[in-house]
Length: 352
Image (cartoon, rainbow, N blue to C red; front, top):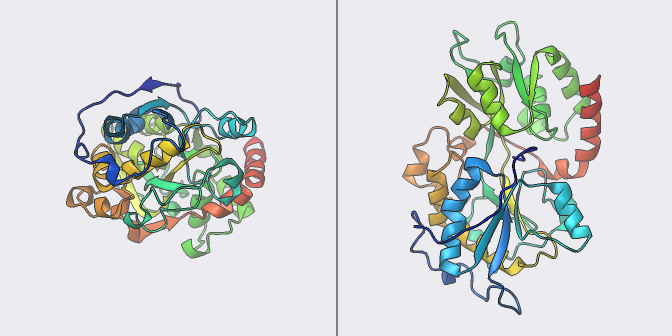
């Protein structure tokens, strides 16, 4: 879920009224001083900006600041190149960073601190959330979204996305190579979900050739919402939250058939000046009440197992965690090892 262009914001959080998490005692989630061998009372968090980060501020950062006395300074957007540069120069300015599923695997170990599972309770999380150098922030979905006013029968599969005769109109795709475009093409070409990885990149690009003239590319999730809402695109790949928001402006439907699970993750840059505070913040925001508070402010799925099972969460038809039976998991380790070469092929294809 990485945005390519967003305005940078930086603001210190003050105490606000806590939604469901206000009564949580920080001592129950953290244990230990704010900073190892010191008394740091600040930290910098980097996320994606926009309504998504505003929801994080309300559910996570403000209540954590109130409970701990640690000032949380926010910044955006996430930038992998900048993170790497900071670490290489041994001058990281960020303490806790939200990243997409294509970052934070063992391929990036040289740039990250291990997650401290003495501070973060891994047992409370859904399967797969707790990893060595990252921990899941929320369950996210790339789905097929479409204009319901353009088709007598609704498109429901990736095959339909590539069928421009039965379903005419412009298609929109994320221009980020790891954003689902190759996976969608292969699934549309008949590859079974369990056989998706390792990706057959050449086959995916060949499938994309069949609709290349009908593709509209988006580089930020806000653009995908605008393309759908304006009708410039009739259907295409979208993050579920943006598809839902587009549906508030125009008639938009969502298909959950073979949706792509592309979770967001928290990482701590190696050498972060307030790494202990970042670990402490993770221990707080992954608890049930903060996770439930965030879920109420968004359409993303909680990674806290108890929050995911909450009736208020499960009643949302557009919550990814309510459609796990039709998900297609993404092999993040494969992407971590092959992203550079795959992107090179993709960029060459775009220019061809």
